[in-house]
Length: 310
Length: 325
Image 1: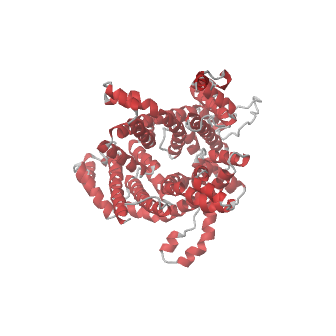
Image 2: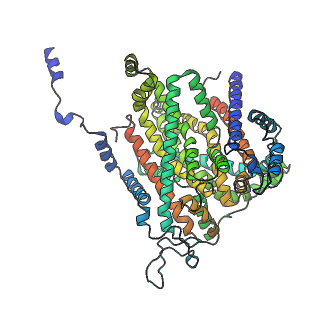
Image 3: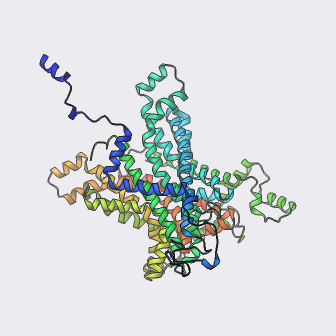
């Protein structure tokens, strides 16, 4: 008997212990093990770099028009200088497509991220409040969510933007409000699961108020799935922004955006001029794909049920 | 069961009230909506007359009740441009939009189901990997861009399929000539393929992933293990035991799917000059023809809510574990 006790108290050999590594280290290791997320991270870094240093890296002024240089083909060698003047060609007004796409990254990323911040803050707080308070507050918030879900989102956005007029500062709240329900539902479910846990009880018995409990005890414990949702929602907000800009409802035409460039390219399509439509769409697709792949990876990484399995 | 139907109906009515209130209030977001209805050069007197004519001088609750009254009578005001009733304009265009949405829904579910099943049964293989990568790509392509690229390649370059135009089926059938409508179907499909793919690809990709994960979950259940250990063939296990149960989350998604597809249709119709509600709405947007936009939004939402009601009832039929009441 005493032998067994002794055995169980002997420390296990070091090699059998799970490695004590930080989350960041684990994240880095898992990222480098998988090929696609790493590639996605690379693409996304390029896009972020483009957005941050648009002024420094864009070869031309994105709004400079030149009628004699309109609809130049990509990679066309200029007869006079012997150099390629426009890597991706020019649009119907003779503007450099590459420069416009570089600047377009700014609006796409900013709108995507800001919309998620707005939607995430709104949805998470409402969800935690609904889950924590329960009763009538819960009913009201969830009924609001039902109403929102019953409304095809793009129609709501169209409706609001037609009345308010296009612009980044109208677009961000509209896209954010379009997303709050997803966060709210998940935050609510998680909060209900956490509400009766001992640590919440402990906080309460130590005299913490409701707001303090929600912010300091519950929020950190419901955050993981919300971060995953947020990453996917950045992708969908970028797609929505592009759609709305394509409909002429996004950002005023003086600001180059990927959806806006696509919208302007519509006249050239029937004439077989493919490049003004092809490149901005490719930019949207690669960015969204990169974010989606990273979101997938993040979900697998943060989901403890999947962690450790190969 | 009937108690459940009544409760869901009541819920739907509350949601419809909420949706109409929301679209009603949107109109007042930017201040006095009268200015949306008059030209920029209108005199003060003209503005005042329009305000009284449209009822914008009354208190908001009264206006909302009037709006609801109009909705019940099918009257949501006249189009500013064509002076015709906005509801009529939307109804006229509805068949073409429904054809496109239904077609997109058919391809997105019918193709997604076998793809998802194959992917799940071959989990972890390169087949599964490539299918899921393509599905991820499908979820990242902006629909309208896909449409433009299809027009450029399949339409203009290869000249395989028409890039615009529409052959009516539903509206022809509604006018009483069912035989003609049926005869139109093959030709109609030729026109539907490109816009249909454009609208449906995102959902196809999402559904394939959904079917896959739901199959994977079902395949690890005890009853599937039992079925296998009874010596049933793999095909029978997958189709009769696993698939039926894997279908449940897919069916739940179908209702939401319809609303999502309707949203995609709005943009796609502009790309393909499809004579549906979407193009009506986008034209109304550029002309700031608010009553038409509002009529379309309200009608789409009501359709969507009723459809989801039907899906919930169907859902209960499929899964006897769900007790209604």
